[in-house]
Length: 201
Image 1 (cartoon, rainbow, N blue to C red):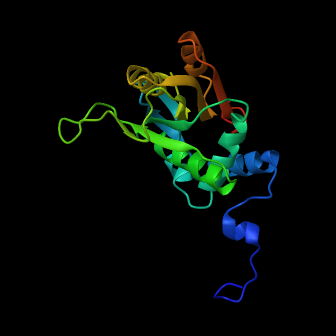
Image 2: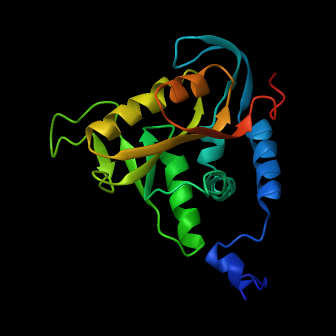
């Protein structure tokens, strides 16, 4: 029993979900539509303009949605072998930590890391923070990507640090060239949700 007198299952206390992948994905799509899609002309990080913006921080940093993201993204790459996950700050950070916590809730181990846009000029001057990546198989993630530029910047930094990048996974694929750019760089690419799923094309 909780302090409010409400009965909670042991699985709930442990953070273990009994939802199916399809149910989690459907709920994630619904939450992105409700919280993250903003209509209007915007300039994207790539420099391109679009008539809508998907503000993924509104879902990746939402306490109710983040656990769903972790489960969906782990399921997306369940057949890939990697020890750590991360990408270019800021978009990748909550995705990686959601996956890390989802792994822990399932009784598994997954480390996370953060790739800075540039190295620090003070302290230990690290470009990559968190779990060491040298000599390890790692997954590069992003919340959403337009051209693939951000995640490929992270991939380059990871490879320079001695990591073996096994692929790239994003939550939302806008169908604007990211997949082509990542695959042209010789990496596998997967996305959990498409622009079509969100009614954006």
